[in-house]
Image (cartoon, rainbow, N blue to C red):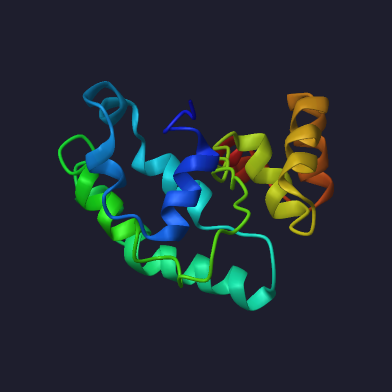
Length: 155
């Protein structure tokens, strides 16, 4: 027996535009069903650039735009029905997981390195912030023309 809530099955139903899928779930499955996870998986497909763009734009327009305005606990069926409008109806696609963007750090050292080295990746900036002590960062700020008042305020 196939797990109805396996991501492979959900995405197959998503691509088939199976509007009855949610209604066919048992009550305990409906409680486990996650519209958020469905959107994360449903927005990205492998294949041509046109197909990838279509799924992403269609998902953003139909699902992401007002996703949190619709209560997920009360309106999972509505969210599922909206999701069935995403697929262009061209058969099952291979969907990939899209990780949520990490929240930017509000750490003062990270902000300093981000301003100083805007070309670096966020992971590299965070590594610099962890590797350098407060005194080293203050010295680097002085070397880049920061006065003591700015250092005290921003670092």
